Length: 479
Ligand SMILES: [Zn+2]
Image (cartoon, rainbow, N blue to C red; front, side):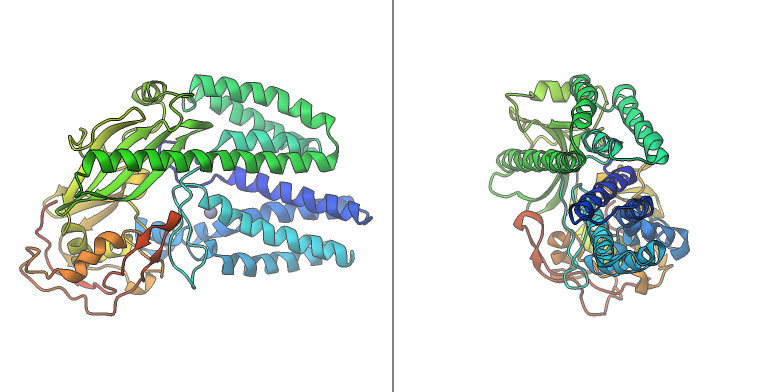
């Protein structure tokens, strides 16, 4: 679980059930009898709607015949947009209404709200981690990254399940929910991903929260479940914001000397842990693009860097993804009281735009990759990876790039997201291939895509990259 791949599907389902319960309470408040059939319809619709955007998994794999690019470009693709969320919610609403039959206007309205909030909740939850979403496509193709919540966040499971359990008359819910509760507790204690002190706090909460929930009424359970869920998430966002400010300040003062520029920071908390964060810092100076991994203790007085770093060094969480590529800290980056720098990888500034120009695989991957790093793995092949998800072996973002040959997939499969690293690709439009040591011409001759705009937390992004690269010359630059 070192890489943050997205919000897990149990969490999405729990969110959908909370929304369904809230709709049931609203119907009861309006004096509408909530029959077992209506209750079941609300619950099933809540779960299906909350999971529905992940239906892109059906086609984003081998069907597209693009290798790993099919998944990278099309999972969290078109189905993870507000336009799709609203359209699919209307479809699910129609199906649910037919299932329930003529139960009246208020039931129909409750089903519509559950369908809409369910699908939209998926986008919101997926936004919370470092994988990101581009919800406003086709009006705005930029990626937005929350950088705040871990892939399987135990707090969210522990908060939601007791709030749902006591409100469930059905035997399926009464069995499945405790199973998930025990599953997450076992994972917290035995998988070694959660620090022992955090695990103890989680276990104490897990023992008391169900008792509190049992004493509450139905409406209070749902309300307290939703509010506590929101509070947990808000605290992670506050901590993320502080961790980002901490690591940016350390990076610019350590590596800067006025020349280096911090482009972006990817952040992931430890599971259940607001106090320890792993970071990938992307920076550039006048010559090189650099990715540096670090861990950060944004609340050093409460949870010290020593505690965090001890856990990281035990390899419990946040393994150093760049270690295999670089293996040592860049001397430019000096540790501070809150930041420890780990491995650093760098390449000449011109290399990424050059690769994007001459290799269609790189060009395509950059519509997804936020933290591109690459290495030569053989005389005829490079391995391009997104360092957010590990490199080589377990890294699902690895793309093998032949250094010559013809592109093997149609350019039409490339979706219209704005490439996250346009801030590095601007150089491709300024340079020419001879100056970049290619000694040949490229065939990128179509209009550019992408646009300038504002990313997460107000970062300014640059212009786009060449649209079509079909025939590629040999790329002979550094690896
Ligand atoms: Zn998703």
